[in-house]
Length: 94
Image (cartoon, rainbow, N blue to C red; front, side, top):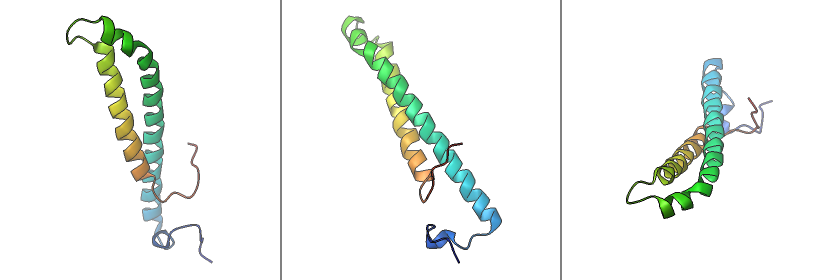
């Protein structure tokens, strides 16, 4: 009997297609991990961003720029990771 937890599209895949699907989902999990790491770094940078915006003259705000960059990277990796992990019915911890 077919595994009813799988979507109908995934029930009759060939071994090569299953391998490709697993690689895609592992890459999605990797991107989600990178997303959460960027969020942690961005949270820590937030502590210094206010000071940087207050005391740095003119347009020289390197910490604020790094914080914005890490937020953009977290968003990119998070959305891409969710897209690649779609259809996963189990938690992959590797």
